[in-house]
Length: 256
Ligand code: DGL
Image (cartoon, rainbow, N blue to C red):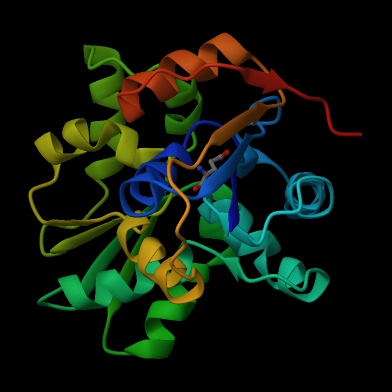
């Protein structure tokens, strides 16, 4: 099996990390569309066009057997269309985040930290309320975080003040926070310093969805190929630091 994984940039490595832990023998192709990150500040139609270009590349040119949308924004905007378009399974991250959030909360008060586009789509709110309409949801858009994380997050005062500004919007009674953007697990340690409740990272449950699809294979040592549309060095530095592995041969590719 060849697993296609993509994000607007380096955020999807939070999902990739879990996939690698669970499926070390599968071949994986990761695409980071970092020329166009952040997706979350763009118009919905534009995001749709961008993420379909990437998914078409993975499905039609790289012939992946399963597509993992390792991006909440692209899941919110493009998953339905991708499911119609391709005959392979398409896995998004939002359903997993919803499931884990409902499981984690003890008082049904769930905050969602996400990009502006994900908040605008209201996908977490709608899906959580569909499953449990007793829940109270507070969506918080955090437009500045993705850019900082793409450039390499450092725990300096300026960054912590920005993070604090967003997290202060969570009312004290809310016991659960969903990291509704795959970039945020890269700064989880900083988030944990400021939010003391349950933190939900949809990546874990996403891998469980993948387990239902992937058949066990006999092959050993899968290989990973990385593609980015923008700055290779920037991606490499942040991804290596987070994944704790050396990444050779990241290819830069411009999708027409
Ligand atoms: N990592 C993405 C997400 O999960 C996209 C962030 C962005 O490009 O704005 O939403």
